[in-house]
Length: 199
Image (cartoon, rainbow, N blue to C red; front, side):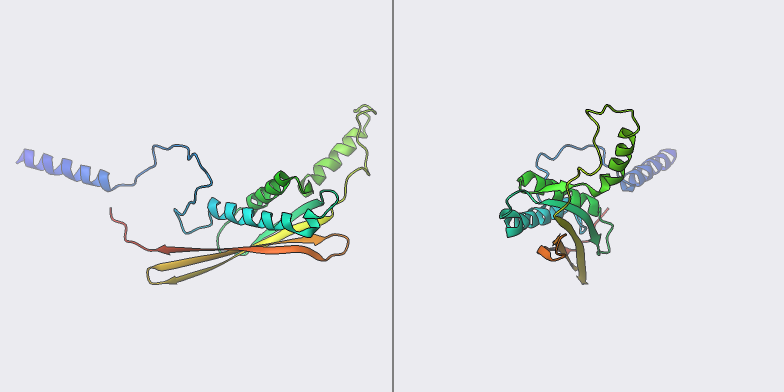
């Protein structure tokens, strides 16, 4: 009887352990981070890569950039997140900036660095920096265009089916005229089907 009770207790403990929470304990690097990732129904790096790649190709083909005598100076302001998800829009803007820079057809001014630059000018004017290496005010290059945009989504569910639609729109506005020089959007639609997940 004791053996039966002990065996039952051990089997119960084993069953509880097997059905308990699981953790990821082994991982490896994915050799190709540009492979499509559809593990979840949320905005993913694959969505970002696809949208940025196509919109950068559109922007660099525009006459304002492709026909310019010198690389236009662009300032990125903001990318609005109008979806119901928490999405790091700064990461999207950073990738967009890096891909445009990589094309060699555009140069950028860093809006976020302006306060740091102003502080450095004050420090260099304090007498602590040699006259030969000091950078004075009034030498910065003004931007030609402002780049901004927004990310929208529509989620639809019917029974076991779920569809997520994303649209990323980017605009490039001429600072001198205030006219939109280029605008384009990229659409993505992902389809998922709910399945019961067993223990």
